[in-house]
Length: 479
Ligand code: CAO
Image 1 (cartoon, rainbow, N blue to C red):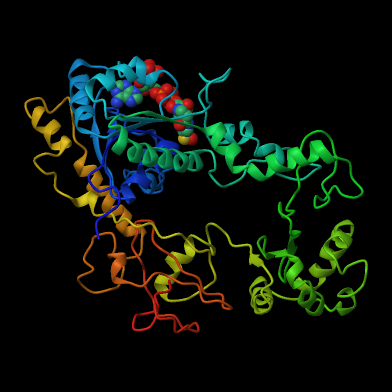
Image 2: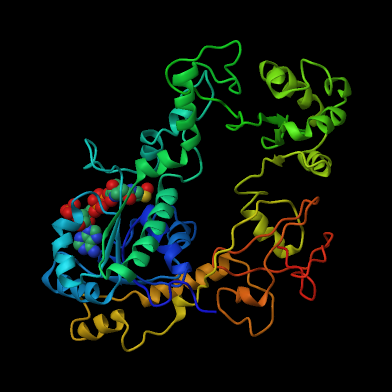
């Protein structure tokens, strides 16, 4: 099956994380991404935080695989000429320079439109129009300015930033969606357009439940599911709610067996109203099922601390996985605290090489493959055109095809290879179409993972199987 964005050409002027995330997503969807880097320096992340000497950092390769690279000095006449040639041939220009940098290169919206009226010009900036529009921004600045830090952490501590890259990668996701919409609209309008994703706005959008709470607070002066209720005080702004659930179903992070020595021996436990009865039975409080102080959600809200303390006495007698196993039997929503590195969500993939299994988070499959890093340019390929134009002057436009091959090699080393025999001969993975879609088997701790290149790593699962028509006659691929 062809890729959704096959035939779309992206001129990728991005660096660091926010913009590269966007163009990486487009590449996964099949777009041809040509990354333009500054001669002699390249994307700063190539050299940052390296773990292998003289090899592009993982930070760079994890955000830029599946792209092609070229170095061009955009401020020299020959470089400008080359870029204008690429602009004529491409569909989308994506950039995340500091405000004004693209204009200073001479690539104003007007100039780009005169070269290619169908060109979509997509930008990440720190702030949208307003007093801060000229400011440079990195991840944590966006988290602070976007309302995340003020609502993260505990009431008696300072604002906190989260480990999730909601400012960078979150904004890249927003921009990618804007680009896809602009490409769709271009089919009827025949024209390109500007697309802007501001990091502050992206974070704000991801903090939408806190915006909801701000309005509720302004109207009612109190939020009963927050830990400040009923004994603490509410001010004008949404307070930091620790690990409270943030939704209509109260939740908390509770200690499990081993918490004294294992910093992640915890479980997230949600006291969903629909399963209140089994919760009471499991924790040894059957009398709470019908007791007027506990039987309904409104009655429980002023007693949440006492309720979660009691549940925690039970969770401390179980490991987080034992607790999961028991709670899942009764459809009680819960989740173990898994490390992003080490034994958790990311490294579990590497451990699976050895065949051991542990619970880990599900990933959303992305329908693209990483064949582009090894694809040979065609005659009409803009990069090939540019290369031909510069054959007489190789010093000015050094193509980094070699470095992309290194990236591809490195990516292959870092991802498990699909063990399926040919025709699965793709260097970075197999064709997902050859394998059934990953499924989570309800009631077990099994989940499924997909490699970030779109390659399914398949292992036969010992978990119970369903016999849905979709799964019959095919291997149960669980990784
Ligand atoms: N040829 C010639 N010049 C080039 C070039 C090329 N191929 N690529 C970059 N440059 C130049 C730019 O034109 C700019 O020069 P001037 O300022 O003199 O016009 C210069 O390199 C630096 O670019 P920059 O200002 O974008 O980079 P920086 O390191 O100073 O700032 C960042 C980095 C991320 C703070 C800034 O780009 C920014 O705020 N971007 C928007 C928000 C964003 O995406 N932030 C997320 C980053 S990930 O955490």
